[in-house]
Image 1 (cartoon, rainbow, N blue to C red):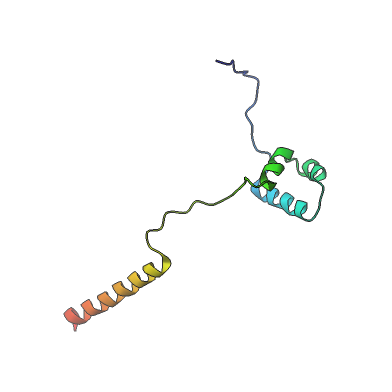
Image 2 (cartoon, helix red, strand yellow):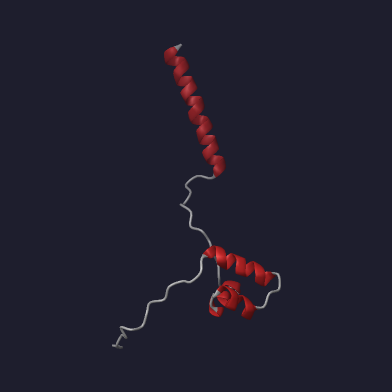
Length: 91
């Protein structure tokens, strides 16, 4: 088992997602990778990863049980059933 060096600090990000988006926009406009790395303090490896084909920033959304159309139809059916129920018992 390898020995762990207690003096080695844990990695922490020095940039935010917003800063990274600004950097990527500058690179798309034609700025030099080296200049952008020095200006914003983001590692070259981070930029290469974000510019590469393996990066995919997808947001996780809850699984949907019904499509939007099915949900709208269900809502209309419930509203119509409620109206029929009220007419039978209230009027």
